[in-house]
Length: 360
Figure (cartoon, rainbow, N blue to C red):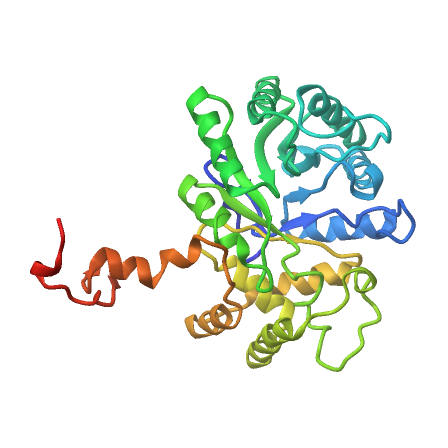
């Protein structure tokens, strides 16, 4: 599957590439935080030349430099911007000392969007994400503001990132009941080494027809193939901040590497292909500081994972989910179905009771 075999993003009319390009590393403010303007533009050009059309950033990535690089790139190429899906996020406060400089209140959302549009040299965004939960602002205020901006033509669609399941469900229900713009996608941490999203947010997205757009799909590069037992990694910018994999993570990494060897591909490609095979619409975000990082990751488009491969990966990476998730598996089926098979699910039999033992 090439990048120009598009998928519909959630319950919307927006068509995007099967992988998004993440621009978090575009720019060098502060120095060492990302890659140069020249390298950023090479990465952009490589992605677009292969048919990619979905580019994601945020207002505070490299202190706004990421957005400016994107704006300058498309301004220098008239006619290109209209054919890509540009997404950015609001919440980050770029004005020290100003309590209204960030967050998700009406005035701050409008101000942040105006600054983003100025840096990106465009008059609209295709997708605008809430980057985090603003505990001080009623969700109705955030949603109504976003709906006003959609109606004004300044944004096309909306999504949430890093928000609790209960809040996301409340927001979607509120939007639908009030006739406001609903969420079409959730941007979440999701990878073979980070699967707790499967407890609440992934089922919610599937039920509501939202797409999942995973960030850090290689978990800080741990699934890239460069991390091996008893091997020191020296060329990763994140290693100094996040350390290395622990024993449980290395168990997953070993299985990924074994499958990659069987298929003659890379660990990164196997990890990304597994994500793409999850239920529903899943569009991982690919990042990187060099063109070769992008090109290596795009090999995932050609990786043929078999059901047996997927099962091995599922089993070795199975997450421990918070309550009440443990109540929704075999115990639920046993209590509900009492040893019968319903919709293909066969339950164990509950210990039998004599009718005379039941108290009414």
